[in-house]
Image (tube, rainbow, N blue to C red):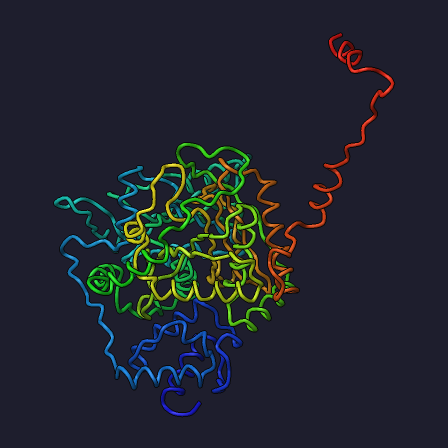
Length: 562
């Protein structure tokens, strides 16, 4: 690195990517960067260098020297800009809700408090668990994160929040099934009860747990959070801090976690001040222009008619993209300046276009919405939804579609601060009870680990009896062990499992086709796997049948009457 800007950038890269030595010619994405890390990189620029940079600038020239050049140009034009400060708010008065919290609170008033917005987590713990250390670690997390301790009420006609006391501790019920003859069925019953029991938004708490002893060296830990106090990123914070606290407390050491500089109530008040005036208008104008005349419903063929009111009961089918195909997708992504998420989104958009007969596809995706470094370590509800309008028209080849998808995502992420409910207000799509507004298909890319690593204990994720799908289709993927894995969730009111398994097969075929024939028009790529092509064209077209050609029709009719 040469000069102060490259040196400062190299230090940020090293922190985010875990790479000690950074060359000025290294590419951020070749070193392991992805969309989420790119956003975190840009969020550090105001404090480290004194300027902002659009995400598109990083993708346009992702080398260290290239980004430094863009930053230097921005500094030359605008000068050093002081970042806004998130100030501490008074806890003695009712607290403002964030925009995201206000949306879920409104839905709870409109629909009732629904299990649709539960975040259940189940972990099987094998080994000598230090139960007091685990309980104390969870209590420390409860006291540490004010975002977990929210309750909600009405004050003079407006929703407001208050915080439960720090010394209340996390509600952790304990069960001992070691001597129960029907331990398996009891465990299933406890897991179902825990995942689906409603929360009380006014009284709280809105996070709870259960510790179930199955044997001397085996436990099940269940944690359930309401979405209004947590999100996917928060799960990563929970995992990391639970690991650190458990290891320290189990060995008799004090809490090693540094004090948090801001808390969720400070963020909620800051967000309402920051996202106002011209900034809010500019973001609303973008979404209004982007989604005007977008299709309000994706017309996927379903196994049953759409019910008059949306049913959120769901199920999931696993997805595994093997290491060889994942490696090829990485190569394709680097070549075209996209991330794995963008490449998979391009293929999935093509599959949805084939299934629906539409070449204008809107897919939702969640974004962490933590554009400031001090927010990265908080547990709370920050996530926002982006509506990505993908243009599949004109029979594009793979390279062209990847470019379209990249541009769409970069523009959307540059306007990600406007809460989705305000996007809906700006666009004003027709509202119906039988489907979600703006989009009905979601694709989420998760970079967080699913479970923590506890010292001396083997921790594995366990299935939960929580069967909810907020959308018609919701795909969730993450990269692990050089593979892309995840699941495709679906509304069981609309689809059968066999149909969704075929959809997963179509995606895999399209991904392979995109890798092998990226410059070929996508309409020429076949999404049918060989087994389904054989079924459609051969087995279902075997029309040969023994026919009594020596007899007349009226005689056959008489036989049938008899």
